Image 1 (cartoon, one colour):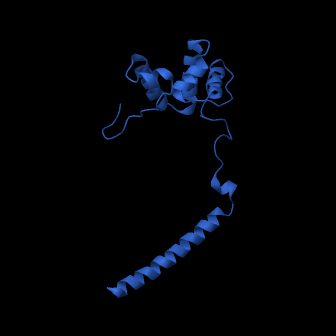
Image 2 (cartoon, rainbow, N blue to C red):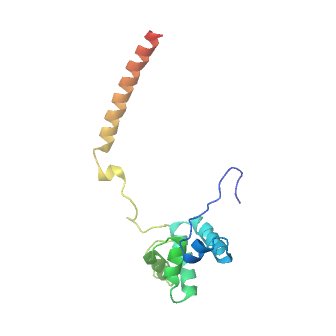
Image 3 (cartoon, one colour):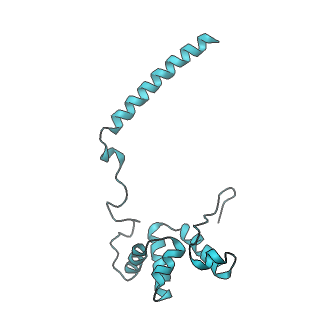
Length: 137
């Protein structure tokens, strides 16, 4: 259920020929519905759902669903593999351990100290500005 004031996820625009040539067709409406559903899922759920749909499409299904959803063909293939039991991702996670970006603090150990230095300088300048502006009025 969507709460008042919250926007419903709309998904992405399909890039297939049918949607570009006939955006009001029944097929284009189905593609918009699919993209709306996929946009509300997490990564693991999305790749599995699209993998299942591609499998049901048969030959060319992966390429077709890739055009419709914008998901890479390798991601769709991974979703298909996960559906038959070869899931390297633990059940309580969306990505495998180590997946995703590394924390900035790990990539740049000096970052915390540099941010502290910037904040200290900013506070000093704000203090100076506050004293100057209260005297100029």
